[in-house]
Image (cartoon, rainbow, N blue to C red):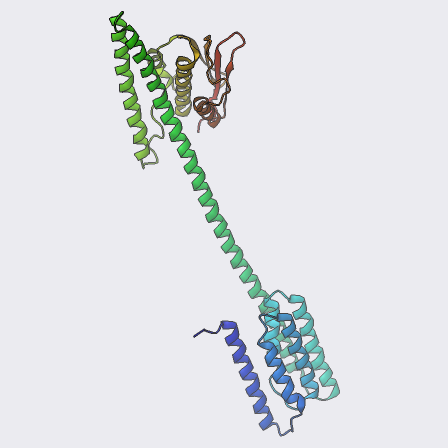
Length: 373
């Protein structure tokens, strides 16, 4: 069985009270009812039942019926209660102008009835009715404003929840990119070096065994380093402590190790204080150097490179040059270059990479020291 809404229940209760009051007036007033005493209560009560679906139309019908009832009907039923409820409903539904206008019409009709001598309404009664009219309109406006406030608060909560979900998705995406970048840096460089040294060992195994032995030793050390860094990276993913490191170790202090395992002859020029750097800058610098040397070894066609690192004017400047005939991602679209650019940009710096006019390839990165977070 379908339950009645609160609004319908209130309407039924008010209609029952008004009709019961009209019947009581018919039996106790000693007057003979006329047609208006029967028609107007029924019409106004029927209109009140439609107050939620048609608030203005319902209000007009109720007010007109009541305005005609009190001057011209013979009974004195409590139809004025219908006006209060209809006024409240109109204001509650946002029809404030209509509520004020019809409320004023009710008060004028009462004054007209008093002037004709049809109904005597003393000053206290008129004041009480006026107060009820004003209160009904005001209370309807208050309930509407409160409902609007609650809806707005609910919408703000939904928006905040949506923003929170968007922020969580954004951070999740950033974390996936960071993990992918770390794995690329950890695996890409070392696996490339293992591949280069393995090729050298195979070519020198028969003719120059000592070279093959050195290459195999480098493969052993590089694979050991790869496993260590991979364990560190995976360990970061398992961390739940907010104070735990968010990236595997990397530092300019380990540049000599990178050069030793790069398979290249690297001329270095280091200037300025390069120790005690912010962790983010130190890590990014080491990663950019390693990725740049990996690209030289894999794509340039030469075994020589030049590395310049300086600390000046609040920036760590890194430049890696080679003079090989090959192309190191000449369109700048490789994941390695993309990862290096992301590292530099995250610190407020920049990275440029492209062919040199005199031949070969160049990578130049700027990492602001004050961009570390």
